[in-house]
Image (cartoon, rainbow, N blue to C red):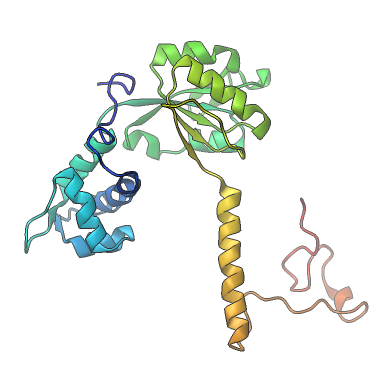
Length: 262
């Protein structure tokens, strides 16, 4: 089977827009679910709904792949799965290294979806000598001193960084110097990389803050309509006004700590 270092996806050379590339995994996920249910064909409207886009955008995206479907029949599910998988490079074997085997790194190592999507965890790397040799997801953790040799030996072109923020840039630079050209960054910091290196950042705290913003807007809208916001708390009672009956450590509603830990 081909390795990622020898075969690169052709999306850029074929002029597929980045926005379309970003939606291809959504289509693939929806199509895979249909395939698992043995659904032979799907209309653009049905597939667009499952992927969360409009059908016109879906048809435009698929036109870049040279796939136009059949009027009155729709798209062949299995063929589209193959076509999108090939375009994304998922018909190849992509060895991946994960650097930073804390709780998040270990959770990613145990994620079963990598193998089914064309990714193979080639190595787990950590700077803590106490982690060296420990088994995580059936893989022995190796020390960060071996990073360069691991990348070279396994032909790794994709690295995943789950280290603390202070170590992420140095790890990134070592991965790039060793030949890694794509990085998935879970560390809460912005990485600086040279031209030709792709970085995708996943910041869970930012996503939660965005959701909090939308929740606040929805609550404000409900208040303006005279509706008590969902999940709204009542004001804390004054001293001696019923607070003594609450179990220690609980908030006014009896189920949320009055003081959340940092």
